[in-house]
Amino acid sequence: MGIPITIISGFLGSGKTTLINQVLKGTNLASEEIVIIENEFGETGIDHELLLHSQERIFQMNGGCICCSLRTDLINALSAVLEVFVDQGYPIKQIIIETSGISDPQPIMQTIVATPGICSHFYLDSVITVVDSDQFERNFLYPEALKQLAIADRIFISEKSETDASKIPKVVQEIETMNPLTDFHTFSLSMKESLLAAQVLGIARFHQQLQSDKTEEHAHHAHKEHHHQELRHNFEALKLQGQAEIPEKLLVRWIDWLLLNNPDNIFRIKGFVQLAENDYLTEIQGVNQVIQFNPTNRKAKDKVNEIVIIGKNLDQKTIGKAFNKIQRI
Picture 1 (cartoon, rainbow, N blue to C red):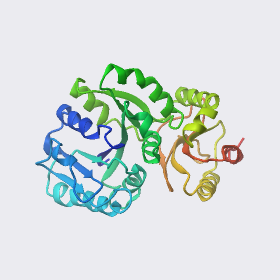
Picture 2 (cartoon, helix red, strand yellow):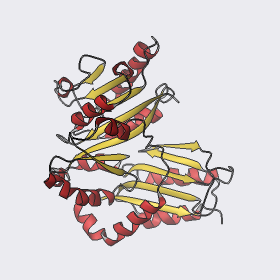
Picture 3 (cartoon, helix red, strand yellow):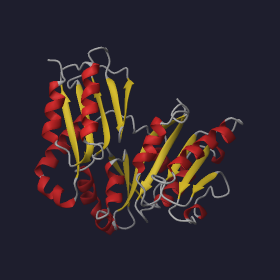
Picture 4 (cartoon, rainbow, N blue to C red):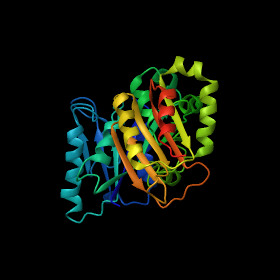
């Protein structure tokens, strides 16, 4: 399947380096089996001096945000891992990408899943976002922080004191209005390092199936709190369901129409559909404008088709009607 990549994002000062240090202490992987690709905004990086692997193989990319000017350097860094380490027989088993605090993980994800020569050797295991519960209200004002939360597969909330712990339910409630695909964990310096490592590495959250009960609860909560949601942010999650098979050509046309009419407003698409041509469900994974159809060995149960779209300013009624039309009754 290739080498797994875990992306660690989080706003400035959220605790990404602390989380990575704890994970490195707790993992069963040897230090020579892990490569860290680190991005710092600015000419000089600082965080790499705090990492346990500072004397080992760290690719630090300076001069700008990894999601824009340094996107090509990410491809070069991953290519270098293949050329220098894998081809020479180094036992690389894990890549960790630590993004800068103001970066957008979405283009990083797109690079991993869609770049020829990269996606054939690496795969995206999970996107993890770290949140400082004490600074959450302030960070919620920044669109960069919101985007990191909206596309995360798993969110870690740093818990530094009893006061921080009391804020966690509100933090979870706020984030769930925009991202029903994620789950939540807390971490602190007192946490057992091996447990934290098991919750970060090798969790395969990017391709994990949808949790119907959770997205149903989200839909009810989002409707109930819709006015509150609009005041806080314009990110939203649209859930589409159906019980009829879909001809593949109609699904492709619907996706083309969806992306054409929402070129900058869709961040993640994830779901499973029953194509008319297949006996098993097909997984849909979308990052920005890149959409993948992946075969599975799963049989449909109650709800044949289930898709979640995370974005902003979506015409939910029109999108829902169009999705209903392509399903063969």
